[in-house]
Structure formats: C-alpha cells, structure tokens
Image 1 (spheres, rainbow, N blue to C red):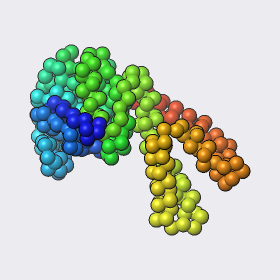
Image 2 (cartoon, one colour):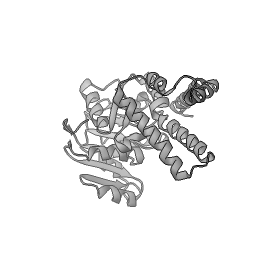
Image 3 (cartoon, rainbow, N blue to C red):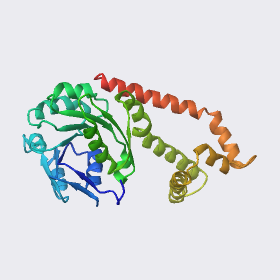
Length: 283
C-alpha cells in the first residue's frame, strides 16, 4: 500500500494482541487507512488493554477482568483476526462462534492451525482465511502469505489482502504451500538476524568494538538489501560484481561454498516445515 492508494476496511476485531497483531494494528492506524466501525482488540491483561485503548480509534477489552471480552469485541465486526497461541484457538472459536454475524471473515495468524480446524468450529455462514505474516510487519515491511478457505469468496480474500498490504507485501498461495512459505518468510527474519549475530561476532574478534561491528554489519545488510531492491538485478549478479577474480571476497565465498551453505539452509527449512506439520497435527 502506498500513500496514493487509500484503503477502506470494515470494522475489525483482534483477538489476542501480541507483537504480530499489534504490528498489523499499527498498519491500520497509518494515514490513508480508514476502518469503518473502528478497531477492537482483546488482551489478557488490563494494563495492556489500556495501552491499546490509548491508541486513536482502538477499543480494547481485557479477558482477565471481562469474561465476555472476546464476544464483545467481535460483535458487528466484519473481519476477526485470531492472533492467540495455536493451542488456544479451538476454545476461542467455540467461545465466539454464536456471536459472529453471517458474512464475517475470520482471519487466522495462528501458525500450524488449518483452515479445516477453523471451519469445523465456526458456523457455515462464516468464512475463514488463513495467513502467515512475518515480524517485519512491525516496520511496514512484512511478507504475508494468504490462503483462502473453502467458504471464502474472491471479495473476502481481497479484503484480507488489503488488510495485510497495510504492513507490506502479500502473496496469495494455496493452503498446501503456506507452511512451506512460513519456513522462508515466516522464519526468515530469524535466519537473517542469526547471520548478523555471527558476522558481528567475527568483526569483534578482529578487534572492532561492538559499536563499530554493529555499524559495519547492520549497515552492510541494510545497504545490500536496498541495493538489491533498487537495482532490479538478481542476487547472484550483484554478488559477482562484488567478487573480483582472485580477490578477498572470492576467497571468502569459496569458504562459504565449501561449508555447503545451500544444504544447511535446505535442512534448516525442512526442519521448520516438519515442525509446522507437527503443529498442524496437534503435536
């Protein structure tokens, strides 16, 4: 979404207001986004609910002090974002099922919980869209996978796409690909942060202060990402331009290639995918 593309969305309820839900909620508060009917949110603690209510256009309820908080939040909401821990999803859906109005779209950000699970616990007149955003949503740079449910219409899917475009880019994929997507974009920020940690440690080992190391490493990652985005070139081509024949970078890349980095990433993402399937099976 850009400032030149205003977005109007219907009333939205966030059930669970952890970091991901808050990131999406912040996207809705930026200029150019209008939420007709306002934003509601629920959180366990009264203190956090008060923090959310302090945001312009947000009304929050605390489940620890109001047993009907979740039901109150979804009354009249067209979009209901379920952002609680996966194990909590079934009980939450049972709690709100009879309060949801026909035509409501329930949006899942709960990792590993299938559309089938949602649809089995909700009325037939309620549709489901499953999503997988990632943490750069906090700075408006998310990549979100979105998968339609069996009851969702094209218009309802488009509505959910518009919601997540307020915090970044959106890929619409079949649900069968969503867990695989989560191993790349969902877990991907952790991989990048881990690489930054390790390169920073290498810089400190070479005598730089932690502050100097952070400047070098974080600035390099940021600059390389922006160069990639601005150039329109493939990463391999940009890497070749940096890698002079018989130079220092070539020697370093040779070490990385010898460590089978491609295989390491394949095994890492396979492990993440296996765990996603375990979660879907209730393990």
